[in-house]
Length: 68
Image 1 (cartoon, helix red, strand yellow):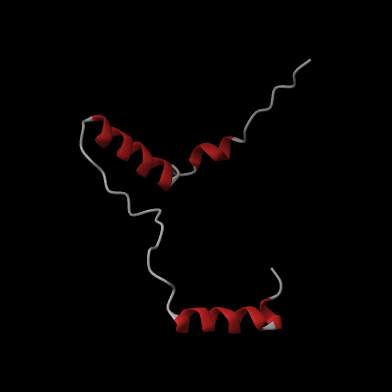
Image 2: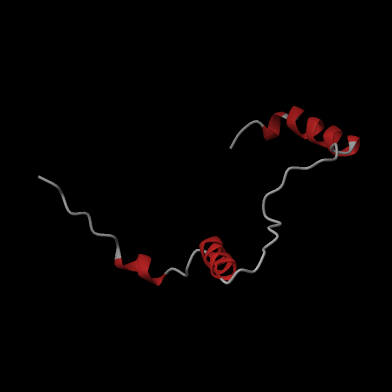
């Protein structure tokens, strides 16, 4: 026997998820044959600058950052 689970009505008051809306618009544009250049996800081809790596290492070494 399956149990019917109802969502809370207050969920209907939440705004649409922004990234789902962006994806929907991208699909609509692509369906019209327009090329889209996505800047959302990438694969960097340049090394991370040394000062950024150093700052990350220093921040990771601080005990105050070792928790949620």
